[in-house]
Picture (tube, rainbow, N blue to C red):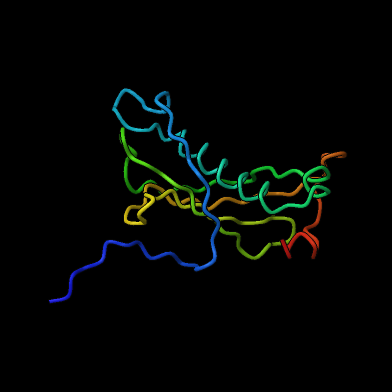
Length: 139
């Protein structure tokens, strides 16, 4: 009989891996990471991706803000658990740019949470929404 693999199956093959730092202060009275902290990890993974791939001009002229978060909690993050964020972007929808972030174990054998977040791109100077242009999509 074939041995069952515990490796998670991702819906994409092209993703960005971002470090997640779980702090002692992230744990609540129940002994696991508080759900609010998962959202911080999602935002940090998305920010890490953006800051790693954007040009200097894009970093100075644009800023991303969250329009919506959806998160499914799969497993509690417990003391000693290591976590990484895997993130990828979906096709833009007008001025909205959907992104997935999965918080997983480094061995890719446990999913702690799956988030689907809609981001909006703003002109940093005016604070107004900005269309996602081809140079940005290429990055």
